[in-house]
Length: 317
Length: 284
Image (cartoon, rainbow over all chains, first blue to last red; front, side, top):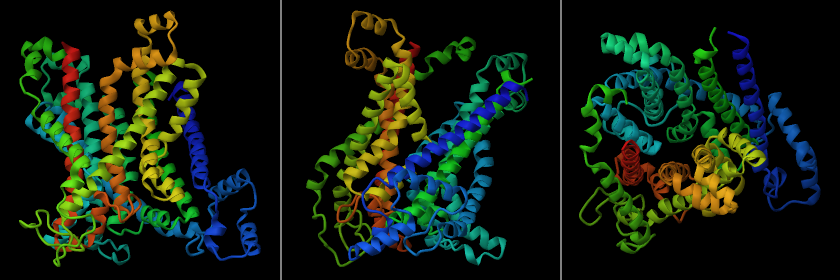
């Protein structure tokens, strides 16, 4: 790795951190725009001004907005993002109990979707223009353009109602064997995979075709290299950077998908926690969950960019 | 390009198939747009009218799409929901696309600090996933139709800005734009009459795609109970309110979701044939 690459990587990481800071300002501003605050929400209409003032002081709501922002940011960074309005529990505990479940779901989805998507993407690029390629193309466009809850409800209809193989609700607490693990995770993971695989396969196909259009491939073709060998040994090594970029970018679609999927299957992760908190307008929880999702999203975007930087042959030595 | 040098026949290939998919797509979109306008008047039952004792009835001659969890006619529910799903999304995409495109045109034409500031703001916006931004805004302001339109508009403006700016930067370097500038034309004239017509097609394709995203986002929000609020109901709310019928395999759960799918796939098919025609046009 040479100095130019290192400089690019460091500057990309700094941009990522600065963007996350800006995102935290946006989230804090939106959630604090309306008059009325946590103390008022907690005490309701029938309260005395003294009680209100006391509670405001306890939460630090009597301070100006920018002071509260820095207090909140400091709390986030030290792992203490405040207290949930709905039940008075620390937000960190609520999230801590559910974050592992969401990460597990994301990990299972990634483990299934990446190999499947790469296989589909690379083969459809190899047989570009064939019936297989066109079928994949139509299927992926259709998959990304239907709502996630259609895929989920059809999956429930087939596997839980008609075939009775799986339960429609996910309960993570009674997992003891691998079979039970599969039963609980099968449908949420399947639904999430549909969307992710479609995205990733399309982007992988585009990345491989981009390589197949280059002149060194034309040279290989003229030399008489067999098509399979041409793709596997000539095009793929050069497409790895763009493909890694595509994988990271597609995984960021997890964040949108998981919000719907966790709610449908009643899966106890942070996305369903966030949806419940939005319904109850429990701002401290909403803010903290939003920051976690944005941080995850930014990490994936940054990784995608880093893959693109690292795979650029002009920066290699 | 490479293939045409090897086999001259490849050049003629795209013309062989008429854009059947595109025509079907445009027909579906036109049908739903018409339903959004006249659907509620066609419905044989009122919005709230309970018409049957049989809840989650299967499809029959009397109830072509079955009945819902209160025994209401599903076909009428879908027709009453069409203006919400399509209308709110259309309003949202107009805000997003017009806002994003105008900002992009100004940014490209003005350049300098205006471009820099707007582009940085958009970069921050793009780092917040649209569904997440929608949740935050709805948590802060509650779910009402104006808030939903604004949420969709703000959430998807950034993407439209990026596409339009990439196009506008190229267009603004053209000689005819430079000529207009030398003539001393105003900013509005240059952006709207010189630049916009020359990037209209990709902007329109992006408009369609963004409409699909917004329909999906808004239906998702309604499905979570955070979108259009009862007694009003869009197709996402219809799936939500009938979800208990899923264990019986009631059509009431699947039909609204399929209605959304036909709309979004229809728009996609229309855009694909449209983009295909453009590609052919640029090759000729």
